[in-house]
Image 1 (cartoon, helix red, strand yellow):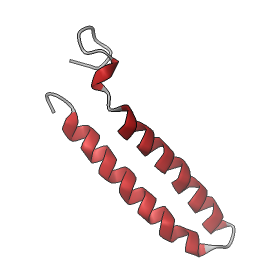
Image 2 (image 1 turned 120 degrees about the vertical axis):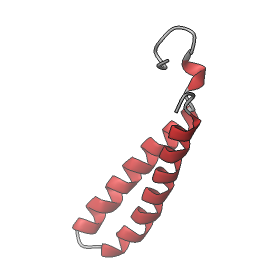
Image 3 (image 1 turned 90 degrees about the vertical axis):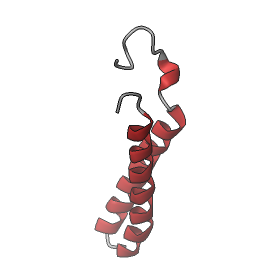
Length: 67
């Protein structure tokens, strides 16, 4: 059953985790741009943010019913 099918509703989506992944993606993108502009130290927080986003993506996939 997909999230858009009747009977599931939008409550089945973990919105806080999804928001965290989106925000981490944006911060990671900013870190990469800053690193490309000459500050390679920005890759360190970018790597931390990427690790957090990956952890949340795995948590979202595990939480899916039927997965």
